[in-house]
Image 1 (cartoon, rainbow, N blue to C red):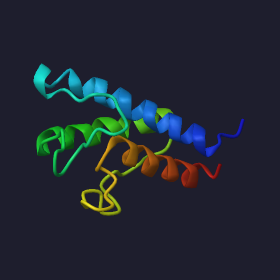
Image 2: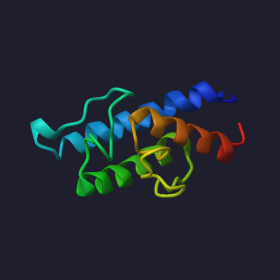
Image 3: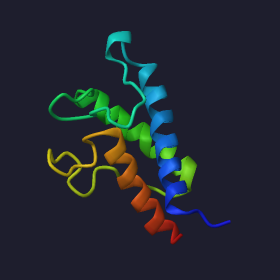
Image 4: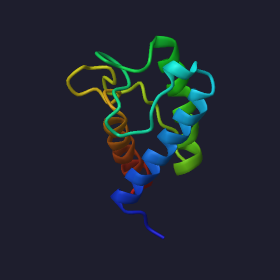
Length: 107
């Protein structure tokens, strides 16, 4: 079965939301991250401090490997740039991951 880009995007969102759920178990109630595409993850108005971001990256990379069967390094490609970094929002991260999954799986 060949996955289409939309399935890669859906899978990316699923993996990211699973990582958020796991991270939220470690965070105080008032610091937990909502599971919405427009949530700002890092930078101005970001939900994650540097320690939470590091944990989120590790958890998300694990979830992505489980979901797609590929290793992804989320610290590549200037991830923290305010203009085009993929950690701006959940959606920007999901789109970045989806494009990597599509390229690595060749589907």
